Length: 203
Image (cartoon, rainbow, N blue to C red; front, side, top):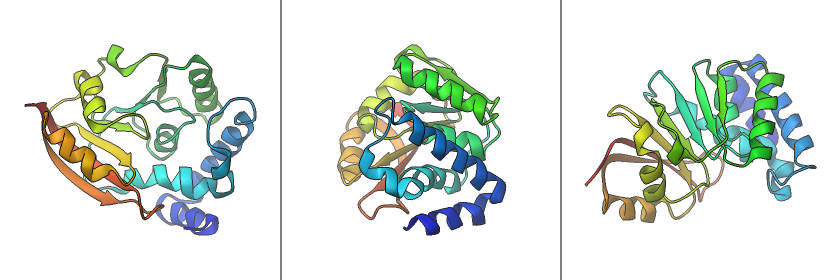
């Protein structure tokens, strides 16, 4: 997916105004990347495909429930801040690194996203109930389930973007967890997959 294709994809699904706000997000992240190691420099020339659409595609998956979204290890804002731009419901960004958490809070203010809450701690210390839990490049599926289970309810949907190891991680998670798993192909990388899980409980 080229940068032009990525911008068109967003505009077609979420509108021109969303595209403008996401462009502002891209500008803020790129500027902050000069001050702290937010994203790999190798991704700057493909920012819209690698970060914006890679995050926004999560909102196009079927039957996402209403309610609070918790994003674990939000880092530079992906997918959490992108989701907040495109979705008005409450979203909690969990980021244990203080400097990054400050950036996320400042960016949410700059983008006028009052539904965003930034929590500077590990997810194990959070017990807010979530309708959606996401984590991008944070830990294995097994580790994410173990850490965030106190935030989950029976109807919670887990959205976990993964690389080529996705199927192996699902198989490993099944040894300790019962869940309804579904795996989607990522739009932005032929080697990336998105693992969706529902009704997650310990065996």
